[in-house]
Image (cartoon, rainbow over all chains, first blue to last red; front, top):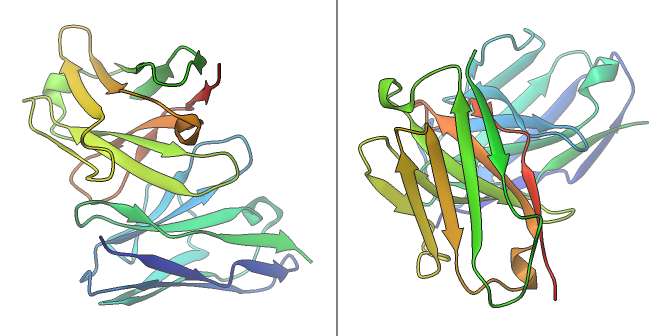
Length: 106
Length: 119
């Protein structure tokens, strides 16, 4: 199965700062990568699919890029609501998720 | 709008069988050309994909659980079900139902149902 490695494990930032999250795949997955946001006690929420397409209702401050094995999720200017855990996910059978990056308030 | 609602027993004894149901409301499974998935999250841990099924009945499961897991669909009840045999403490998790409309991503999730395996 394809292993997704996310870094860093924790990102300590302040509102208004830029967040850059990384996801690396153990083998090439083309551009079939998604990003999710999860808050405590809630289900994950789809942010980005196919590496760079924003899901319905997702603010423009969230952007994704990458292909092959290296992918990035960028939050251009953190809002208070953005402090959460972020997961990447690939769809080659079996689908797998990264271990997550926690974006916490500095 | 389409909503997913998981239901389950809450507590299951070790070695017994876990049965979960995902009820889809706001749309017919038969009219939605999506994969309906089960995904779980162990306490304080990451996400693990378990299986998917299409309304036609075609399905696929995670090889790590394939021998213990069965996924099924009941289009008359608009439900997707998951059965997991011979559960252990390692199966303690929140189980989510999620839709993949052939995006390679899960665009709609239920709220999840927590399952504890304990005697």
